[in-house]
Length: 189
Ligand code: UDB
Ligand code: ZN
Image (cartoon, rainbow, N blue to C red; front, side, top):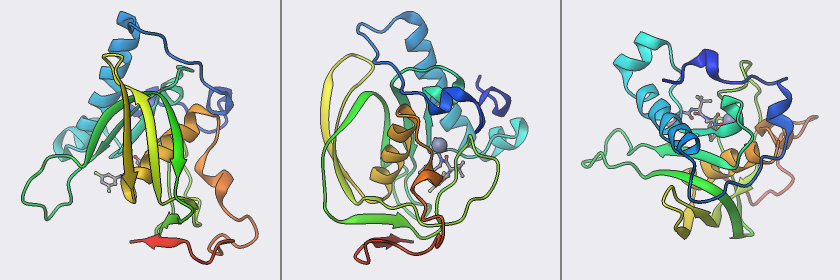
């Protein structure tokens, strides 16, 4: 299983590279990597397993974060705590993802962002697209085109940034971290 020691940290050049496209059918190695990345997210969101192995509860993990420079990321956005139904809001391994269109409207998380690869707290708004149309391949090589908004859209943009060598703090206004260039940006609580 993937543990925190396996996750590359800021300063490792793999986090600043553009990852290579993945070819289909997936190799056995790529298939195992995809499964292990999703397994990390599932384990990390289970309080007992997370405590036992000291995992940070993750909602997304990109291949460069486990030192593999390929365009693959696992995303697991759980249902809200108060939901009747605990079906995840979004659970997918996204391969060769592309944002084919996006809203003019931006959005940012009120709390800012963090990253499994960044050990310090870096405060500030991270402006992102509020709504995206995402095209990607799933593990079976099927091309999917989906629309996402709000939190799951932000998680996917954070993961896609990793595939392009971009980290969340690159988007923070250096002088005024909680000042937004676009005053119409929606702040998500
Ligand atoms: C995270 N976790 O996984 F709403 F079960 C962050 C960390 C950096 C704090 C671990 C997170 O937001 N947890 C979370 C949120 C929930 C429900 C839940 C767990 N990431 C992913 C990452 O670093 N991927 O590369 C950072 C997020 C910041 C905004 C989007 C991704
Ligand atoms: Zn990250």
